[in-house]
Image (cartoon, rainbow, N blue to C red; front, top):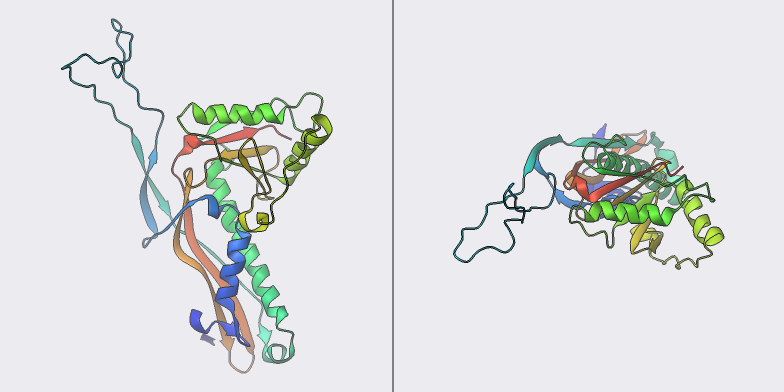
Length: 293
């Protein structure tokens, strides 16, 4: 059995790696919102920003913040931010097709192989997306990120208020000096259904047109200057607000790669893999909205 290099990863002239890369870009909704960079080590040491805004201290006698209204010729107060050292390890994602016989390779429609690569890549990228969401939400058991309870489940049209819920999440981010303008609001299709029903049936609002580039960006619509992303990887009963290219990072150890594995005289397999890990850099810039369903 032989293994083709990525440059040779083709079946009947179909460049498997280029196909997989193209499908991955379209399939992965959350990686595009990460700070993306590469890593050469499987063990990564990095630093997570802690707590809050830098402010001057006060004393019992002087309640005014020492950072403001400083006397002339006085020495400034010393203030600093704190960072917590973290260690993360690269995770591997890999899948392969069943053996495709040489006879099938010779006489099957070439689209069969394109569809095969697409489905394998979509499945793999779904797991990468799931990992990013799990890190982002701390697997829905938050210890460092912020949380906000919904006024009521979004299916309860008589008492729910998704707009107030979103504004409450905004307030959580602003409290730590993060701007929620342009933030991502991710939710399951169930939450999205109730959200749209609330806007149309309850409030009678017009819905912004869905842009033609939604399939490329993963953004379904914008509301209150938020990028609404709908994905089944998000657990129902939750919505996630975070800041793109700020809250979370994705470190790539091995980019999306495809190989063909040849069993001479018998057939070929397609194997697709990726290695990397998500890092929660600014936990306070993420707010988990609970109790939406």
